[in-house]
Length: 335
Image (cartoon, rainbow, N blue to C red):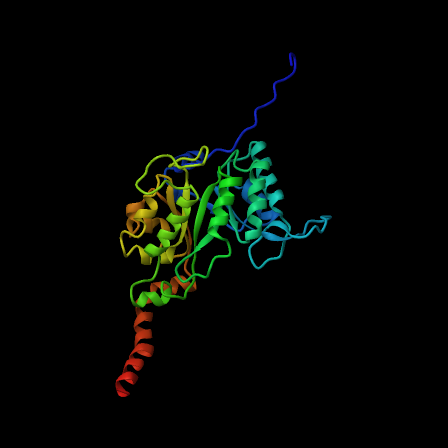
């Protein structure tokens, strides 16, 4: 109507690319990205938002009880907490609104990485991402372990269900999808004895299969735009979180991640977990140097797993002498 102020157009979240993410934070390399971890309560959230160093906040999401004073007990809702926690003083809605308000007031740009720990939290959180404006002013990643990896258990979150939910409810969010890991199994620590520990072609194959089936990666040998996703193209950022320790074992086979990172221009890795050397140093000069420019690093100093990895050759020799050799002798004696 004449004389009536024009309504401000609604701002829609944008699909991130690797280059747009780096530009957002003024970084030259993905190695320069700084993370916060377990940003799962009001105090730490405000500390991180008002600090000056972090680029991406990692926070865990599951269904549980909201502990806020005066909050009604309405049953499980999405809260910010890691397993095995059952409650938190910070709900997902409060988390999202705090981030949005921080940006609306002119606060420093800071991205969000939501680490889903509970399959029941996926749909309600993704539905609310856009409603709460998360991703309008800064990057948002949605993370989950959706495939079984080296030494890992079956994932709690189904790959097909998760990918379809991301596609339907939050197509602007960057996918951060990876594998469960653990110490056991053929491709876990025991696999170091016969050189099969770490990420193997079968782990890469299932990831590429599921992402292509969901229309989130182009078909093999086809560089055309990704099908069925409005606004998503072959440069859309997808990152695969990989255990630093198992990645170092996998990198001994130089082509392990070639197909994964070559699936689209937007495919990257994120090194996580314990490591015995600086993750950035390893990417710059070590076995992963050929992928430099496509790797984020979120590692920490070694504890038990890192120390075991560093001494894996000695441990393998010990296992052989204590277990394998006596068995061979026993077999020979009974022949």
